[in-house]
Image 1 (cartoon, rainbow, N blue to C red):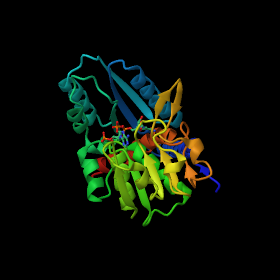
Image 2 (image 1 turned 90 degrees about the vertical axis):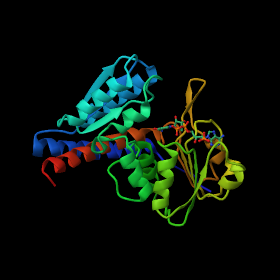
Image 3 (image 1 turned 180 degrees about the vertical axis):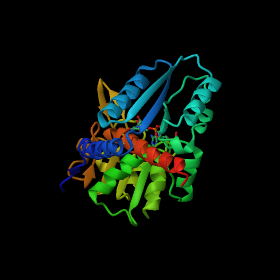
Image 4 (image 1 turned 45 degrees about the vertical axis):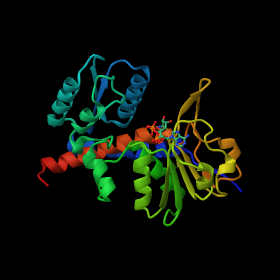
Length: 289
Ligand code: NAP
């Protein structure tokens, strides 16, 4: 069997062009542009890189961006106060608080203080709740949305497909499982307490792995022709590795995402798309619609 490699970089590049064109059209029409505000607390090197990447991508696509730096001694109240200022600021369309936050800060309180209409990460319970209730919401997690976009682009029919999702975090596994169910897939949720992962995976037409354990899945565990989406990212000897041993899946999987270059590039472009969505939502609010 021929295994098709899903090129996330290519898909993300095409989406970047679409977003840049739309931002330019807004600039010409409204004389303004969507704006993302990012709060970074402390000096965690990985978080600094993520924030820098988001800022660069905004610049590339014409989205305005502000990074607000707070010291690693900041309290929950101080971060929430900043969020509330940004909630009130009409020039800001999207707000993102870079996670994780230093231990003394209540991450949940901070995330839930973001205006749901500016919640471009989709972590507010108003947005997550809509996904749970099957109501079209404003925002869903960017990684989950990126995974669904990659599946959509393969043309794979999810209706009635058995999908195994490994990992149940509120940022990746859980929202993906709900989005798959909305497409009429039958979802098997797997996690660290799951018995017989191999047996379950061998029934799955689609596997989405979001764990962060290199080589958790190999070719002997998957069904012939399965579509494999690997969201896992681990650092192994200076290289990035996914959850799936890709080599052993070649010739057995129907489709597979590489790491790096699969799900990774999709997350940031989905964030940019959410900034556009936030801009339109606030335009509608201001127009009293
Ligand atoms: P997380 O919150 O740590 O969740 C990991 C999940 O994996 C948990 O549900 C855990 O089960 C499950 N798990 C752990 N060991 C397992 C095992 N042996 N078998 C089956 N399930 C197991 O992580 P996350 O934030 O969802 O991220 C998951 C991975 O995706 C990480 O590698 C992360 O770097 C990556 N990620 C990538 C992107 C991207 O842009 N590509 C974005 C976000 C995350 P329990 O619930 O039972 O503990």
